[in-house]
Image 1: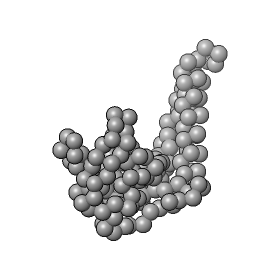
Image 2 (image 1 turned 90 degrees about the horizontal axis):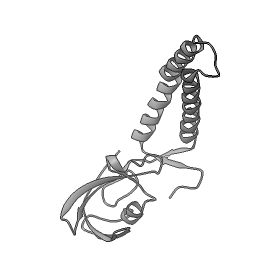
Image 3 (image 1 turned 180 degrees about the horizontal axis):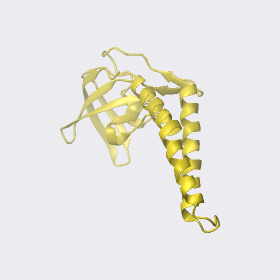
Image 4 (image 1 turned 90 degrees about the vertical axis):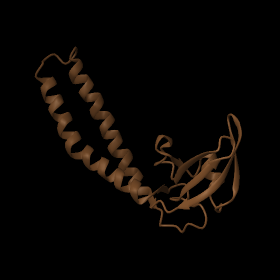
Length: 159
């Protein structure tokens, strides 16, 4: 596992953050500058909600730029792994044994985790449990609803 200063990312995650950063620094800043310019033309800043909204958005965007820059500076990109055991970057194909339901999760770093898109952190209960397991293994994960059992059906290279 990584040290505390490292932020684990897949190559896909790095590319996505770099794209977002470029977009924020170029188009995002231009659009906000234009919004502020238009809002300033309305006069009295005390009661100018458009101006205050644009300035709030600008502060949020600049904070996001700093956050992404910091993440990229600390990023440790995971290398392609084999498919013999689950590792960071792997896609684990699971069968929920209780509901006989097949699901796939990519194991990623916390900065990339996105459960809605089936990307779970290696720090999550399921992510921690899956790391190091092989096809055919049965794993048990403690969840708020109780113990969930999965069979590991396949391991795909996620990078």
